[in-house]
Length: 234
Ligand SMILES: Nc1nc2c(ncn2[C@@H]2O[C@H](COP(=O)(O)OP(=O)(O)OP(=O)(O)O)[C@@H](O)[C@H]2O)c(=O)[nH]1
Ligand SMILES: [Mg+2]
Image 1: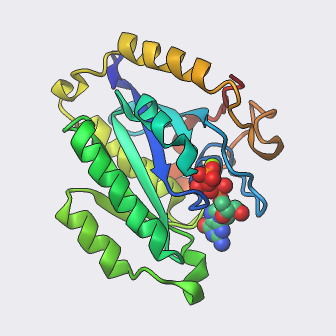
Image 2 (image 1 turned 30 degrees about the horizontal axis):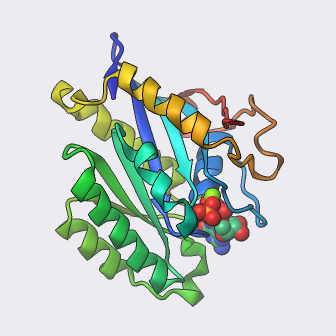
């Protein structure tokens, strides 16, 4: 995370979680207001950016949407290294994905920044009839591990903007010392490595070609000041 003066914060944010849990769908819903029933599995990782204005600060998110497939696991440290915030996603209709989410949390706790702002996200709450992971179970695990917990649906947009707003608020509150090890220069180096390693980075479903889609937000979300999404082509 870097503070850029006048209340501006640039923060690297990473999404982790099992394949198919909805990471890309969550990001696309937030950045572009889009959702695809046939969202393709991410290859390597995809990059997006989004600026969100709070009363107290403007937060520019540099978002790394990682691939959940196991064969990409070894790439993950490149994406969470230097991150100021992480979103660990599971699918409420899959107990396996919840177990996998706990493994991601453990990995972040072991190797990540101790000041990392971590969110545990139970996605696909629109699939209530297929629920396998109870809300209480997710909430309890999050509380025990110092994460904040949110149930979302990328499909219906439930709690998606709220999720990023909450992260932005926590970043804005974070002490400057939390920036340790996350200087903009080191972040840029990380990103350079990441770009080379993701030469096959996926551009999901035609979404990537539209780099200037507007997020038509209302109310609170009318405060979004920049809605450009720039997935890396590698
Ligand atoms: N019902 C429902 N389906 C969802 C939701 N979010 C995502 N999906 C669907 O779940 C599938 C996987 O979504 P993705 O966003 O590609 O999941 P991912 O976590 O990025 O998967 P990987 O890139 O393989 O790691 C797609 O068919 C989405 O349409 C949701 O909130 N509700
Ligand atoms: Mg994906």
